[in-house]
Image 1 (tube, rainbow over the protein chains, first blue to last red):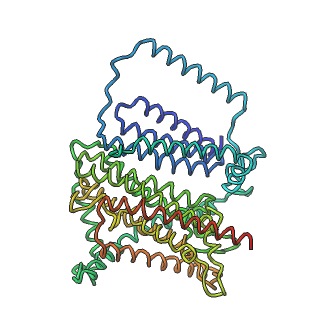
Image 2 (tube, rainbow over the protein chains, first blue to last red):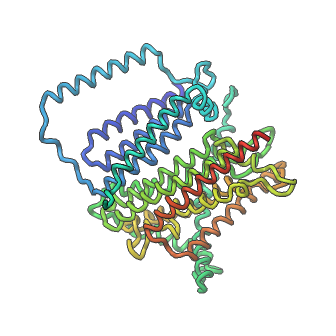
Image 3 (cartoon, each protein chain N blue to C red):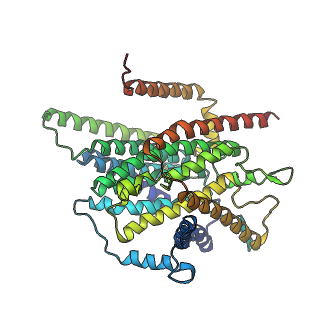
Length: 172
Length: 351
């Protein structure tokens, strides 16, 4: 095992563990922080997959902006410890666990059939496009221009929608 | 990384390249606190610290000893783990930002090329923004974990402030990225080494003056310095997010602030003022490399002085004014700058 592989495994494990802590935790602020660590660990994985550009975006957008906003709202509302839900049915636990197992099986099968592994710089099939921001940009603005523009319009619509919803009713 | 196996010496050089600035930056904090207090005193027409050593030069050492030996108090109702983690994040974020800033040209020694930079990443500028966006957690966590109203108010203000100004700062820096068509900071400097008419340096500050203004103003907000120090506004919030911190834990926040001032000055120098380069200066040999290092330090020092000068000259903004400046003045200006640079680049490509 190379050093890169060891770091990748550690980061991946950290991402899974802290994602789990985020779900299980009762203290909302600590849950958000677990998610920050999970995102950071994911960014480390991206770096080792030769995609530093995506790693940087992961940290800037998710850890640096979205989760700060979450924290901001939590602190503003002064949310305390979460109470365990009183309603709920035992069948939910059973169905939920079954769904998780099925999903994990699907994921495992997919990875095994695709032969997923960590690329090296000398690798002929290495996704060099992801590593080079310029190459990625060229691809986005040529082959995937339609998808790119579609997502832009979707985001713009979401932005306008949020603005309309949050806006105070004017005295009319 | 190539095919050659890395020898022990290569590893040592890489370690030194990274460690040297990281070890030196906290050392520079010591004279910087002296400079700030003497500068403040000069601006306010009073003597300032002048008792300990000649011109009060040993005063920072005395302050440091005091900070190390004071009692570190933890509030009983604080979230202990996060309370202790917050100053550590502050120092970590402040120090690790510098890793991608080139602080000198390339040294050629014994057939080796040693670039004076921690790591010349292909995503250099993005790395800087990624790390600075993490530094907000230090302040937010300190505010929340202290379990005090003043701290919490400081933390909340800070998160809103930093999100708002980060946007303007990033948009301003996008102009530099566009002009040099690279995220790599060594490319940004290489592009600025060209000259107009052989004398005027092609520094980014000339075509992107408004981008520079937006970037530098946002830098004040990002480092929580006056006139944007609302997270710690002492007249209303005692000391804001670090109200409940004492001894060296408070010292850690203080150190992070000064390191941030130096790092932001270094980044401003690199993005807008040609970094270690000067027009007509082509560093050769070890002496040339050292000269480039000195040029870089001198330029950065100038901006550090501007930070001190502004702090003791301008009053603090009100919170609503702060938000208004960020969203209604700086962001549109940064966007206009970006459009202007894009137009300039298209014109340059056609020509």
